[in-house]
Length: 79
Image 1 (cartoon, rainbow, N blue to C red):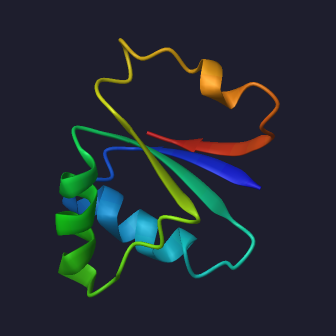
Image 2 (cartoon, one colour):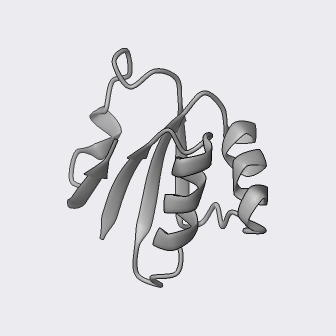
Image 3 (cartoon, rainbow, N blue to C red):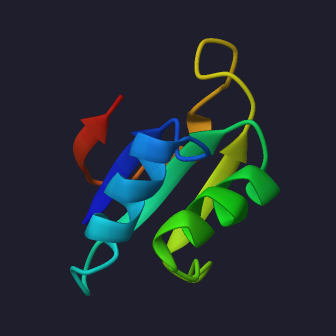
């Protein structure tokens, strides 16, 4: 199961990422300014980011092509 999470580089997004990663089968696709922003925000909750389960698309959700999601079953979008 894949969840798309925007704003993972912020406080609320980092909290949601931490909670999502507590569910073993969930994969998370984060749309954020940078991979480093996601890592830094996760440290607020003393969470290390498992990049085997977390994919970061760097950029703005409005300008990204989400072609990489073809064939992926997305179960939720948190924005």
